[in-house]
Length: 197
Image (tube, rainbow, N blue to C red; front, side, top):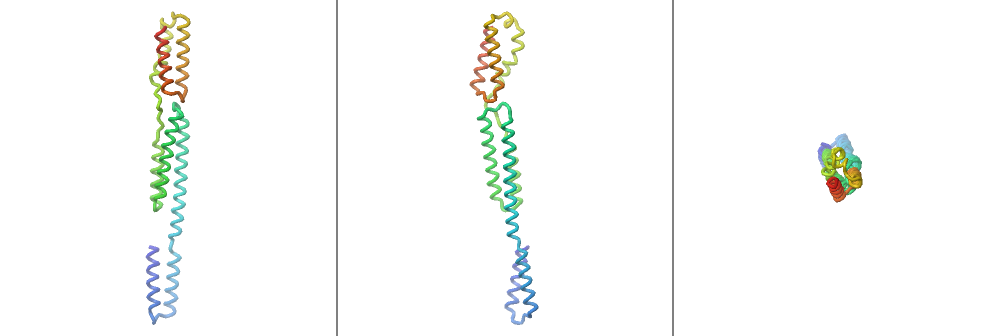
């Protein structure tokens, strides 16, 4: 509408210029109308608004990414590699979102790109590549094993071997950075110690 107002005022001014019978009042009015239409053009302002919206949207993406990374850091049962893999996904989504924000041509597009980016970041769930379920199940049997005859009547060294294997298994369970190999080894050692009673 502002462009149209300018174009109309310009056309009118050109008509007045070309009209040899135009009065001074008509000339002054056409000039004033053209000046006002020029001052009314707000493309610069809109460009500034868009730039500001893009900056704000990118800040929001950075905040969402930082929040998600903190959540990943505080997730129990993840190895450093698992955490890093999840953080890499966060960085990837944040970059994608910022690219989309940059490509947006209006504030609505910026808002959409921001919201989509935040949603994608929030969807990321860090996954543990190490499965401790079998080891946990073996450790959970300890009270039953220790109450059984096999344990109570076992040789002291066999009891000690079982207790050591159990302690080690519990340590591995509690260790967020334990590898699958360590988990499997602890499970096997505990099973062997149980069978040795």
